[in-house]
Length: 92
Image (cartoon, rainbow, N blue to C red; front, side, top):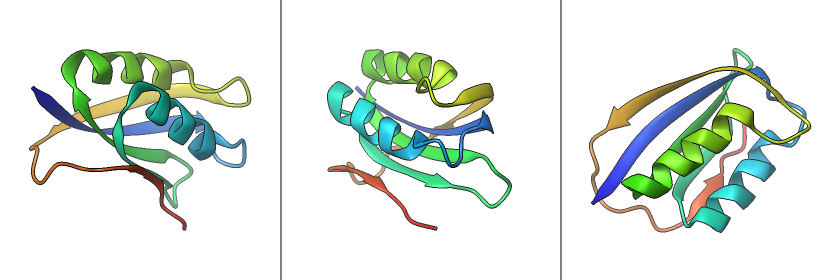
């Protein structure tokens, strides 16, 4: 069953290639969605995949890449709509 979540990541997550690492990890796990910087310094991820895959992806988001420092993540469940087909980095 597909699960769709919004993950907001706080900490030192902008200017450290967090979005690129997130896209690479999403492709590795076969997660579809997007990642973008927020004006307040957080990163927002929309992710859709099978439940077990989403759990693994969320676990990775709690640490992030070695270049980042994740202080907190907030996960909100979203209603699945039309299935997402890729994982994109959204530009500011």
